Image 1 (cartoon, rainbow, N blue to C red):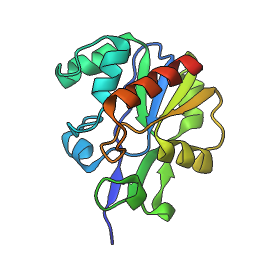
Image 2 (cartoon, rainbow, N blue to C red; image 1 turned 45 degrees about the horizontal axis):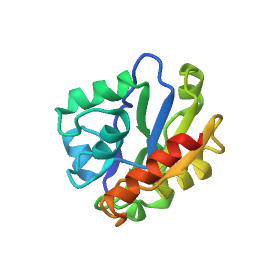
Image 3 (cartoon, one colour; image 1 turned 90 degrees about the horizontal axis):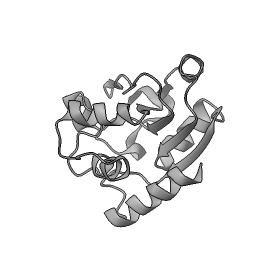
Amino acid sequence: MTELLHGLEPILGQRPRILILGNMPSAMSLASGQYYGNPRNAFWRITGALFGFDASASYPDRVNALQAHQVAVWDVLRSCRRVGSLDSAVERDSMVPNDFAAFFTTHRTLERVVFNGAAAETNFRRLVGTPPLASVRAPSTSPAQTMRLEDKLAAWRAALEKI
């Protein structure tokens, strides 16, 4: 049987306004205990460009920069079974979502949700329902999403302006 994987605790500052939701951290991210730990993942380059911080800074500095910009990061899935890192490899019947009812109740300063890719949005809607705030899907920052970095950045910028 495939090992049960458990996600990471959210990146969360004092008064978050934006929640970026991925599906489930990659194997590399889980091993390092850091969101978007695969250096080929564009997440830190994109958020660095959008929020004006150095994407090559230390992980704690990048986390602090997101928190300073009132951005929280979490994943739809609390646990699942998956071989490798691809969202398509997640065993559908093993998916357990995080407790979003409690999260949204506790963090009332949140104004919007940005889904990092289709899997995050699809699984949120299937397992949790409709987000209680404005939401938008941006292209996945994963290296499996073969869109050029410039195009991903433009789409993320447009997504953040849209809501």
